[in-house]
Amino acid sequence: MSTSLLLLIIALIGFIAFLAGRARSFARSGGKLASLHSLPGYHGSYVAIWAMLPALLLLAVWLIAAPIYIDYTVRSSLPEPVQNQGAATVQLALGQVKSVAAGFERLSADELAAIENRSTNMREVLASKGVALAGEGEPYMVQSAQQFNAMRQYSRWLMSAVVLLVSVAGGLYAIRNIDVRFRARNRVERVMLGSLIVASSIAILTTVGIVASMLSEAGRFFTMVSPFEFFFGTVWDPRFAAAGSGGASGQFGLLPLLAGTLYIAFVAMLFAVPIGLFAAIYMAEYASPRLRSTAKPLLEVLAGIPTIVYGFFALVTVGPFLRDISAQLNGLVTGNYQNFIQAQSVITAGIVMGIMLIPFVSSLSDDIITQVPRALRDGSLGLGATRSETVKKVILPAALPGIVGALLLTASRAVGETMIVVLAAGVAARMQLNPLEPMTTVTVKIVNQLTGDLEFTSPQTLVAFALGITLFVITLGLNIYALYIVRKYREQYE
Image 1: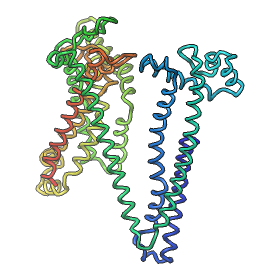
Image 2 (image 1 turned 90 degrees about the vertical axis):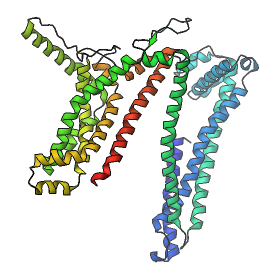
Image 3 (image 1 turned 90 degrees about the horizontal axis):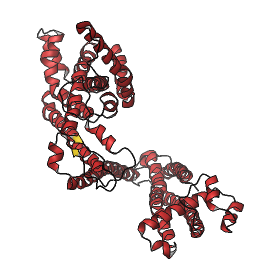
């Protein structure tokens, strides 16, 4: 029985258990719901939880443990000459056995018998079924593959039987507990609280795991390259060394990448902040409710467009437009129709990234402005101030801490952008102040260093983790500072 079908059956059992528990609570109350400690829905949920949760936990453990046990058993049954050649050879042989086992599931009984009798070439038969082997296939692989398939099939059926038995038994046990004074609501809420704790713990542990993995690999990089050279170097030239040379050549200066990251983010914020902030002020203070209900969702649609689409827009439209218009302006002034703005440049990436950031600025700022107490507006207007004076002198100062926090959160979003920079700003790592020339960012170089079939043994690949942890620290600092500002000043106007 497949896992998806088993999950469907467990869900069906849980639904039936819910109805049964609900009906039993009705029966126990004699039609007087006031005599029940908990509503019938809680009793049904309690029975459904017992029918589903233990079975799902057992299924998860089985799906994790069974493959490990089967691999260990099949690996132990491999011939001694194979096992004596080392762990890498054993792992390769196990992988080939699994490929043969997957191919055997697609063969007919006659084809399988022919392979067992060695009357046909196993590699050719499996290739005809879309299974490729690294070699011709050893005779022991047939027996090991059959053992692997037999154990998998037995495990699958045993898992189905045990899981379904646990599901039914859990439901029957829970139904027996249903009574008039049974605290079903407390039990259900306890399970829900535990589920929320597990969900939040998974999110936290995932973040910790990501940071720990990045730190460990970055530590390996700093054993090969000096941290001083990395953090204060002004040249980025991580040449991939030839095979056998040790891979120690190249220069890994972070400053050109950091300068490009901050420069492009700064240009994007220069473009996004005025437009987004003015849009937020208009929608919060001047627009009619009908216009606001239409304009705000339309503006927030920009946030849902994939960044690769913005990259295409920069590459096909914005970049060529700026290049051509610069050539026209240069021709009108000097008579030389040579463009002074390159299609891939800081300003191209900044403008397109700014368009992407407009909904972040406007939506966050709009929410903050609308939270300013109405009494402040009415008091200003009552003293004779105009609406524009009220916005400038009262509302914006009151909302300024929240707006600054929103802008910092938007800046962290700009710092981590990749696809727009790849297509609009190029990959040239340089330190310069001309926004009409190409530059690149940390995220682009992370992609470049990890592109291809590479092993994480040289500084040219491990540097991606050092770049990643650096970018993580920058964005984390911006987020923490934004939250600090919001929390420090928010209560002054509540």
